[in-house]
Image (cartoon, rainbow, N blue to C red):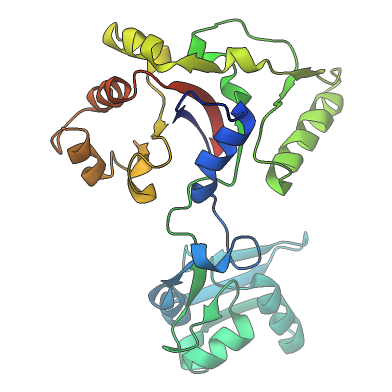
Length: 283
């Protein structure tokens, strides 16, 4: 899913690209091997693993190379390739099983679990994640190119951001699909168009004026407050899955029932001498 964030930054001598990347860096999603260890916290998912362990599953080979799964919706922690290997070993096309009737939880994790690690001290099952993680990748402008400056002009072609979070597998897959699908339906490939930086930055004083006039371009889904203004856990103000964090609203002088438009206007008023960058982020 893509959303639009306005990254608020002070006017200083730092190049815009470096300032945007530094502001967004604490909010990168990731696990061990992708982020520094000090950014990660163990997220206990033992209960979710146990739900899969105790559920009644019905696995059926579809005959077209797929596997139909019935009986439980959450299969995030289940390695279906290992399930298919077991079905092949047992000579089954259809397998009805409740793993809790066949083995203990540790054996289930070893034989059919995926994505999780064991906590070295507690033995809990989970993952090491960034608790502040919000984005997988981002692009200046992106699919919201020009929105922050209320530029309604839609460019022909697929945009290529000058400033971004860097190479990403998910972004590359989407770009490849954008190249292949038009050809599959008999259309020409869309040209790649460089995005202009000045279409995706704006002074906060201008955004405040637009917000007071209730203009659509002034209200993104997310605001990222400047580094150092508050602790990082309060800098990411968003609407999903709910408006918050509440402590940040208090810092802005607002009550817990403040509307998103009120929050945006209060943030702009606090940082009126700053500038903002419109960033499309995937989460």
